[in-house]
Structure formats: structure tokens, C-alpha cells
Length: 265
Image (cartoon, rainbow, N blue to C red; front, side):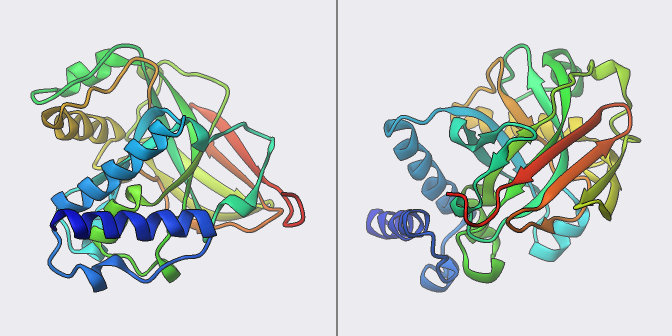
């Protein structure tokens, strides 16, 4: 993509955010764009958000399961940025008007106690850098109409990020086997999905290693205090105004997201 095409893609996504209206897949307009181009689009948006007063507070890893990679025709995950405005308090009503077509996923969130910067980060380095883990719910959202996304679309759209709800009970990393930790996801009291940490690249810690080694050569350090979402333990589930979602994870406890009724702005 040349500079004009890059600006056009950023403008299309920016309008989707501002108007709360999804757009057609970007890949239709930019069929020859590469994943590297998509990250340039993503980074330009994040830069604009920071200049407007938001702040990067972490990262997310997407396409972390083998099933999602097969669906998208890729052989590695992607990543996006988490900004301060994306974080919502547990049990407090989340305005649904800020989302276009939200879905929700249970994830084991890492909170870093020390910096991680690749390349060359090992599992041992990643384990040492984690301060504690929390149960979390990621709200994924897409500015692309009907979720008809390609790899280029989702990367450009900040890896389809929407929001984050963190649980309030920290657990030491060594107190739980991330691979075997099971998860249940309930929406309005109904069990809708089950999964385990092993669905995330074999172990969520592998996603953290991948992220550090991927963003490091780009000059990005995973900072102390940052939150890293390594990928979903189950399939994403749609959410609607008024829904209450509870994720329960073995050894970690639970986390609850409450979505405000439609009439609340």
C-alpha cells in the first residue's frame, strides 16, 4: 500500500468508529495489501487514539487457536493494542452503544511485573515477567460488516478489539496449570461454551512468548503493569443489551460482565 491507500484505509475505519456503522471488507478495496500493510493501518489508528488522550495499556493475541487459524488460512496468530478506554469494571453496566456487533470470549489475562522485549524471549523469560494472572472476558467487535473479515481486515481493525473486563482475584502463575485450566462460559445463566487453556497455542504462555518476540523487532516493549490477553479458551459468543456473562476458570475464579440495556447511553 502506498501512503494514499494507507490513509484511505485508516479513514474508512475511523468513520466506522465515529458513525457506529460497519463498513465493507477492506480487502475488497485493497486486494493486494499484505499483513505488514495491515499493521501499518492498525498502528496509525492507535497513534491517533494516543494523540487524542488515550493510552496503550496492553496487547491482545488473536487467531491463537488452531481452529481459527484454519478458518482464516494462516499459520500464526495476530495481535492488537489494548487502550485504557477499552477496560470496563466487573459487575458495572457496560454501554452497548459503543459496540457494533460484539462477541465475548473467556481468557486468562497476564499482568506483567517486569518488561518483556524480544526477539529471543523464552518461556522462562515470560514466566519470570508475569506478576499474576486474572480471569478475564474480552469483548471482540468488528467494524467490518457481518464479521466478513480476512486476515488483512482483522489486523487493520486492531485485531477486532472491543473491550476488556478483568476479574478481581489475582492468582500467582505457579498456582495453576494454564494448559489444563478449564473454563465455562454462561450467558444469562445458560451454559453456552466450555474450553481449556490448552486451546491457546498449547498454553497461553506460548502466546505471550510469541507476542513479545513479534513486537520486539518493531521497537515495542511489553511494559510492567500491561495486560496481555493471550487468546480465547472457547468459541466467541454474541452478546446483546441486558446480557450478563460469567466466565469461570479452574484455579482462577470467575469474572462477570454486565451489559447495559439498550436505552442506557
